[in-house]
Image (cartoon, rainbow, N blue to C red):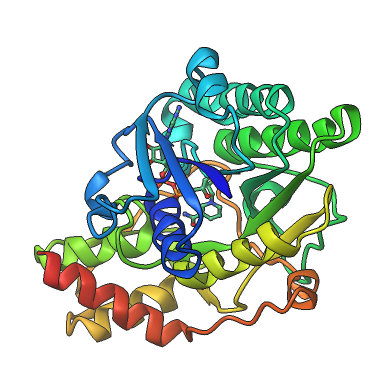
Amino acid sequence: MKIVITGGAGFIGSHFIKYLIKKYPRYKIINVDKLTYAGNLKNLKEIKNCKNYRFVKADICNQKIIEKVTEGCDWIVHFAAESHVDRSIKSSGDFVQTNVVGTHVLLEAAVKNCVKKFVHISTDEVYGSRKRGFFTEADNLDPSSPYSASKAASDLLVLSYVKTHKLSAVVTRSSNNFGPNQFPEKIIPLFITRLLKNKKVPLYAKGQNIRDWIFVKDNCRGIDLVLHKGKIGEIYNIAAENYLNNLTLTKKILKKMKKPLSMIKNVKDRPAHDFRYAIDAKKIKKLGFRPRYSFEEGLDLTIDWYCKKK
Ligand code: NAD
């Protein structure tokens, strides 16, 4: 089994590669990553010399390289993306380029090279916000940021290739991931790394926004299930059902790091800040998915990791 993983030097992709190598030592893995600010080969230092692992530094928008690298591969798992909402508000060009054009290049290569399975990694943010209730995979997309709009566009492109070209593709949409190795721009690693430097943590909207958190290793197990058992053309929400508002989350981090509440600095909200993300995960549960990490356990592991790295 030869698998091309895109964006494998990033946060979730690097955890997924390490997970695959451990669980399926016979699989051959090719990691294609451009190494943007968010990609870091140190995330993969434990496996960099494994015989069944190869790294290719490349942009997924480069059609020639992508066609070559996917030649003879069985599966593609596509993580590569520009992934930070705040950056997409300041400048969205790279988001459209990588998330939409890059996905298109990969889809074309997958069709040309008769790839047997294409797993597209997407996000719960494509559904937009809802005050109560849960989005199922059948719900309409209503993205609010250029990031989530570019991901929604890529999801629709993938699903169109299933219908038009009979590509064997599946889509996963997970909630917010957290864990070691995440670039410190998203709320959990940003707050931990700032507190380690005794700097205040900037909180939008007094922390009222609600997010559902999944420990990254649990998401990897969900993606593995979809890769091996997911039905072609289907979308799978992946969630661990840990709903917290950002103030509660921040207080937990402060308490675990023994910092006072005065370390919170309320800042002006981001435009179009989604109030609440909430997805229904019944479908992935039917494939056998159960999260293994409680939120507290995952947060302890994450804080420990950043403390040791300091
Ligand atoms: P990340 O930003 O940590 O990593 C992205 C990786 O993609 C980096 O290694 C980067 O170098 C690479 N990359 C970016 N542009 C590229 C290009 N043009 N060509 C090749 N490589 C490129 O992202 P992440 O948090 O690991 O997210 C991975 C995927 O999961 C993304 O598709 C994201 O939308 C999705 N997702 C993330 C979360 C989350 O909470 N982090 C939640 C749901 C879904």
